[in-house]
Image 1 (cartoon, rainbow, N blue to C red):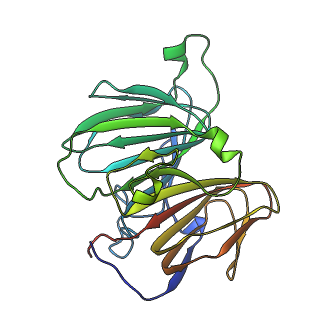
Image 2: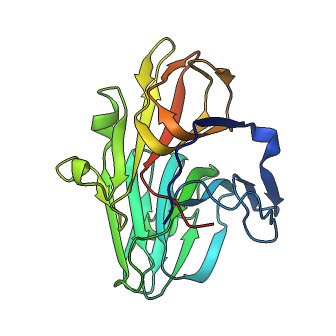
Length: 255
């Protein structure tokens, strides 16, 4: 993994993201993904994927494989059913953090069909979620799964650790990922509320909903993102009710 020391703030607007429309799926990709490939846009720090997905009810991603990747899923609306080849299953909903370590290899599915597990009538609500992939700092680990309810922590305000492998978050209410150089925060902000970004060699700020002002850069709308290099400490203030996701990273994938 490599590091850099040249300060940069790179704003990426929602309209610049790669789109995928599949009838049952609307997806927007912050980095190269699937058939969307740009050699100049493959990652930031150790973050390789930041997909903003909306899946129609009764549909979803059929069983497919992953290997040597830490996959974190954050649901904004609705519910998502996870089932994998290691026997893990769960329903992910807003305020519940989930991590899957692909390790030596795992197969899983993700569907918007929670009524099939819980019983009752089918719902008509889409599920909206952000899925993020970071590389582990060790290949060939055993596959794993973890989910944790952190909704109460979000109500306290500020940046809440969601998933982290960093030592400073070892005692925090966050799921663990297999990368000691990276951590993900979330914040739910009412209009007028502010948080301060951490300082790190690499930061990635994503606004999955709402509108915020970034100190020194201006307004960021739903779907906008900012890639910070060798900087941080800026204030993020909600213009209207908003939610933000922030990756703090102290290493990068070698180019």
